[in-house]
Image (tube, rainbow, N blue to C red; front, top):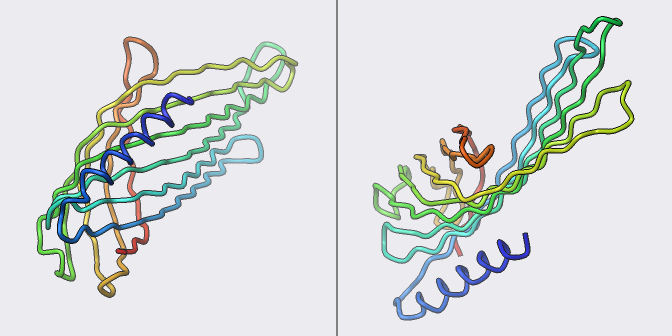
Length: 194
């Protein structure tokens, strides 16, 4: 994990140094949060939440490099029947995603509505812990890897520096050495141009 943080820091540093030659670089910071809870009954429920922070460096008028960090938590409680009655199983999944995407804005930066597309890559680190109520020992699954990411969205300018941003993102998350799962997420957040 320390290696991932170092790579992320090096990319940020290279981008800042490389952009010093531009006349007026615009930097945009953004945050978003999502939460969902589905309760089927007292023993069967799913709860998810994630938060994302990002910084975008506009290299040219309509092109930006976005660096982001997402932290996610997924918890699932389910009562599973077995020969002796039922077992309550709790699955908790912790996710850290370090992303770097190139964004192409399809409108002028001063427009009120600014659609965009993006593509890049992400380092995904996942840890899943499974615990049965009648078992004292939980088991753990860990996986990580570099995954392609892409998406599209739209930004609504409220003022010259403040906007609301919505996006639809896709990341192909590694499950093991041979399998990847395509994860879809819709996000709404706030961004500030500096």
